[in-house]
Picture 1: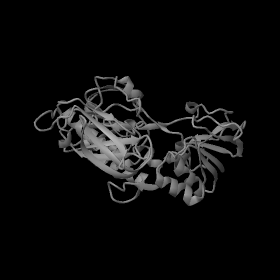
Picture 2: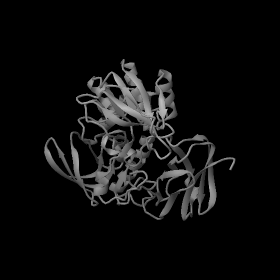
Picture 3: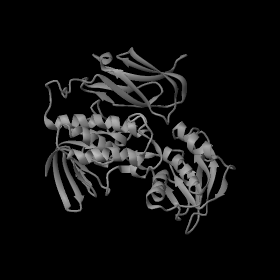
Picture 4: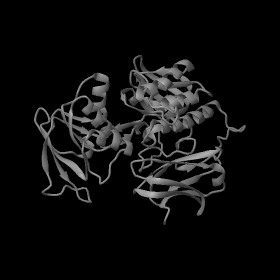
Length: 419
């Protein structure tokens, strides 16, 4: 089978990318689940679409908007199909209801999303009873399957899904004893700390972790302790909490096994591919978007970056190089994460053909009255004031591309305005 563009993943990133790519080329979406929409289908709370649609939507409502457009577009959709292999020549091997299928594409968009860290990945000790779930699994049990995971809950980690599940479980009648976070600061958005914990009287214990899981058939309780600056449990602070369920909200990992298989260079900080301003990876014709590149805070940003990936994947596949389309790689400008910046996406500028360039970044330390500073070859060309920056909350800054013309390197710093 041959086609122009293959989009791997039918979640919010894949849907947005596929729709944009279809304006220029024939598109196939491959989705391993039985339906499109990805994680949005189980996110029945609102808070989606506020920036793009100027109204608050639930996850299924947000997904339905794009799914309905895909159905009208003529895009071919292959559900219940898993991609097994992908190579740098854009050849794909997938397995679905009709068996093994081989696909040759002119361009590929990687939109596989991310997965949750498990108990094994954080080396959580104790017995192996029933009642230990990741936050996403617990969310699916309640919102899709209609099953309560437990009645007396402890949550480890203050990621956004864990915070939302603290509220959801409380609304369904469970007792959430508390949320325990190993870091000295919350891991989720401030709005979720307020709306999901403070509004429901659920305590948040910072610099705490679970040191043991107790129970044979079912979780009977957990031991928690304070941690020091090195994140090691402090002797004498351990206490036992009776519970029947432990929910883990301990981080997300971009799903990039296929990216590595294709020989794509991976950023060790984001755990996603290095990309340029077109969202093209280090392998020509393979683009990436959404949480497979780096974990986003809100789905609106996923959609925006994915539309860029789809636009240029479609142009690449249709052969629209030149003639004002600007797909030639004329530059190799590195984007450097500077003072108080953990990472910046995109990491390279290779085309300089867009009117505005949007940089997504996360800071290392919380700062009030901060200044995002963009420098080209040592000269400050752009500044943006931020009332506050925090590690859990992404900073987004759009810069006129004309300000970066002729740069050998672009550096992004986040400083206090008072020096």
